[in-house]
Image (cartoon, rainbow, N blue to C red; front, side):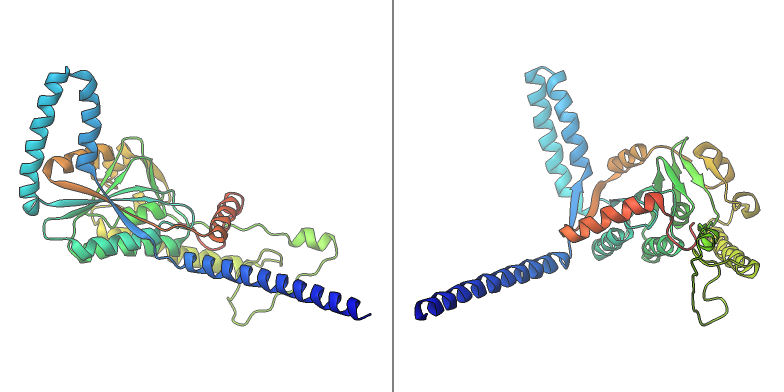
Length: 334
């Protein structure tokens, strides 16, 4: 009996040790994940001038005889050294990228990139933004536009370049620029607001399922997903959309006073060439043309902010992207 008790006690001690070790391991992994999740990320900077030169050198290495290529390399080194000496006086253009989704998720990186630029920018510097967005949630794109206005407040000239699309919330952002450049077939405009929601009330009713919703405030909820919508609720939602649309039009017109808002503020979108005629953009060109021209005038630095997502964050982002593909987030979209 004593042997049994001693062996049983040893078994319990070993089991308890394993459980404690497992708990400690889980706690450690959780803490590590949280620390990684709180990592602030890093600003990365790429010299676009050197990037162009390096690409050209690779072609020249095959196109030219070895002797001629070596002579060219020597000349490039002399030019680069001279440029390094006068770099202090050269203006600098900071290149940013914004690829918008329905939630304008890239505004978080944009915020950090603009903060970094404002820390070092000098008189004569400028900002180039490659913008691609079909629009999305009004409040999120409004915040992204507010980030760009920080550049205007700091008197840093901003050029927005649109190669494919800047519509709705995307154009709201573009309108903050001193200059908008679009490729001839880019989609521009869509100064309008939309909200849509499915309603399952009749489906639930047919199955004798009641949906109860309790609110305080007459217009806390205008339309609902599962309850019975009323004409009063629909009318209130239309009123709210009209108010947001009016603010959208005002925002654009304040920054592009030459526009005939009755003509362009209808929710329609136009190709770049048509948008140029309407005054929605200032110039027809690709972002490549603008960036190369800036490189000829001075230095161009590509600034980007990156933060490594934790595993739970990556899973959440993937799930959210998939969900947005089949389900429109609630609230008005611009």
